[in-house]
Amino acid sequence: MTGLLVSVRDLDEARIALAAGVDLIDVKEPRRGSLGAASAEVWRSVVAFVAGRQPVSLALGELVEGIDPERLPSAARANFAKVGLAGMRGDMGWPQRWRAVVENLPAGTRPVAVAYADWQSAGAPSPEEVLEAGAEAGCPYLLVDTYGKSRGNLLAHLSASELHVLAAQARAAGVELVLAGSLDELAITELLPLAPAYIAVRGAVCRGTRSGPIDESKIQQIKNILAAPTLTPSPSPSAAH
Image (cartoon, rainbow, N blue to C red; front, side):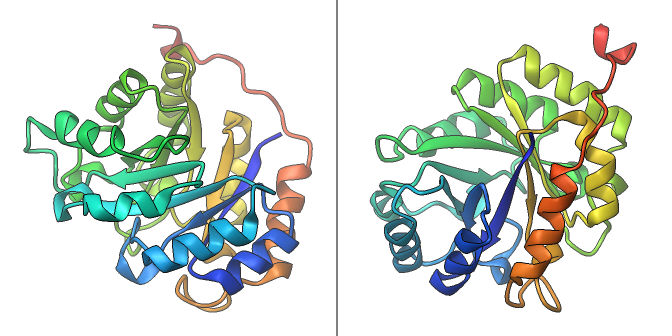
């Protein structure tokens, strides 16, 4: 069954997410963007509190902004870490720069490749390019997210059929998909037949805006959707090529 990833911004929200039975707790600061990094103190406090009861992932920010190598030891004991690639499309050396960051993650913290569905407006590499780099780096997951949060959700930028093809390419490369990007209940229902490893949400489980506090009852609503039976998609003709 597809798991639920919820992004939290502090220790209080991590407590709510864990109590609600979230499958993967992601730590980020939504006011700093799609992959805004929280403080190292928040990282450490959430990882210490969760204490291995569920996996934890960390957003490290955008590569173009620079990832402070001195902060990376604070990611120790987190299961996963991810770096955004907005603004890197014109940099032919982005794969090497990205690898330099992920290869310096603490032992046991695995990298997650991040592709933006709105990659053209974000100035990011295409999802296919990111998938290739992620597979070469041994990433277990490809997160497909949106960079701009005011231009529609994931499906406003990539259709279900395009995502079906990408899912097939990821499976062939030994990488699982994580789908995010301002997803509401209707979008989640439409995406579940793709059998992603996780559906990732923030705004859908917040009171008010995505910067507001998360709500346990909203988390339960999403969990109920994920628990409902879904049809397994048949291979699309384009995915066979």
